[in-house]
Image (tube, rainbow, N blue to C red; front, side, top):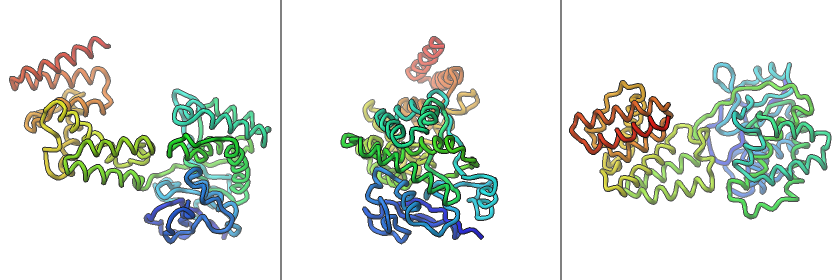
Length: 390
């Protein structure tokens, strides 16, 4: 039986799968207290580079220190390869797949309106890719055509996730780190924020497909499942909720906006899997707007944030249904929901133009029936503007 080691990249404690092939590896362990997992600062390592290399310090450790495994892989404490039953891949499944393929990777991510280069530059720095191309031209010029094709195309893999025979994974690691170390020698990232300083992990996500295509690696594209939300997203939600329960919406917003500048990934759907961070942000936005307009504050709905969150969800569902013209919106009147809350919630719902007009008309009619002419007039005007914009 082949020895399989699927290393789970982690920086905090988590619920480790009850399967011996899955082995938690603490990345950046040279910079933090040990948490009882395999540390990536043992043997030959680049653990201290973790703030810039992320999970790749774990890949480097695997390359240099695991000489026993026949098959090795990299996943994250929240991201795993899944089978058709949405369960973690087991040893037999991995062996079966790799009997006909060289490597297991994530399903390809496909950009709809831009290429890989444009997508990277939209979120990061253009010089990262310029220096990456220069490194490939210097070290592996035979890969340059494939690199350029990938950059001009719209497909890539994400997460630096992989499982393969140890020889295949180590050959990839040797190729990858040669390029990344060359980039590192020639780039100045002192002006980068904490998020963009994770540069080498971001670059590597675009390079795996280059290597696969150049080496004609036979890959099996596999579903990746998310197990829980990112711990930092959860912590940010908890801090915001504590402030909101104290009525400190401005302070909560400052914390969330500061976090978004430093770590925008915390707000991504694959980090905020429950949507709780987004909900907290929207509730905070509503509270601040209502305070400015002198309207009843959403935080006055209940002393417990959990009930306020349920109140927000109810408003969201009702206004979503109103797009189809079949929602009873009296809840908004019964709970004195402000115009600021209504418009903010609507801004988060993806309506067609016709659906948005339906909502405005439904709101106008409801307030007209309640003889609230001021509010009725507001939503009639919104409906007319939307019709004119079509």
